[in-house]
Image (cartoon, rainbow, N blue to C red; front, side):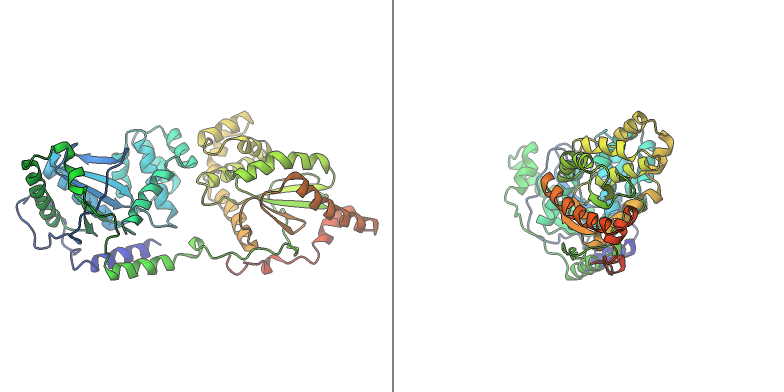
Length: 483
């Protein structure tokens, strides 16, 4: 993915009339020199307003405000930020730079990096983390992010809690939505007093651009515009449309998004046939209920999903009471991308399962309100349950634990599970939340078949296997070829 992204940035540079070239970004102080390339990509001004909580550098009442969209996995963005640091040093309070995050969908590691910067910002360390991420060379895995937080003297427990619970997802998505409204699909794209600059430009070009805008701003000041109202005045008649991007860059972007790696593609799932039996077993998943039960309910659960919490609260315990000898329940993890904290919850539950504490741990997670559980809560629960804390923490970020969650997700996708909760009762699909009595009716139907087979002489321990004897095998699941 990184190589494809780099190719995109290269195509972007090619697409802006040679403005991105191979010259070194020398620290040039020649403010008065307007480079022949010091032109904007669109003569219109855009109404790119400032927002509460914006992360800014430079003057509080600048002559020039630069709102720049970029990400941490983008080499030209890193180069542009290096140039802007120099610009700020050269122009002082006359310039302010505002950061807006921009990520390409599917690049989960970069999305996590952006949220790490925001989490650091919540502790007053946005810019140190920002600079660290810009030089991280794409190392945005959890252990690296925690190491950066430690380097910067952050409260690491609070930092990782905010990553796990998605506290800053809304801010990241807000930035991305604004970028898309403006036609910004990838970075770096800057708006200099509302005028767009697409792609990386060398420092002399930036000096020319800034000098042009300082001259414009000075005329407004001389005409009586208060300095504190300058930026609002400059963009008050700005358009709120989409910028024009070079065709070559757009083509590269379309190619990039069309050719994501297999694990990032999201093909349309073919749902399972509710009248067909599929060979869905418990495997190594945590289970409750007798091992020789004639009925097996495999539940695909997202622990941040309100409907999963509801079915757990309303149905699971009651079903175990009603069918203590006949029903076995297995939990498979199916964290959805719309629930930021769900994957972390799943990993924590798997780590607890490794110490034989899945069910009490799971109960605590399912009882928690969405968005209120993070790593510190995981540790607190682990301590309460008498678990080995260090082993739990090691497992929480272990590749093999992540693979357990990924394999459950792949199984669900092979089957075509189209949401959570999703159930397979002796291989037959039950989609979505079901009231207790609906579940009871389906269980009673399966149980009557099992009892008929038992009365016909099938040993109890073989009833489930006989029920699945002609079930569709995994190699023929609806989406087996895609996953």
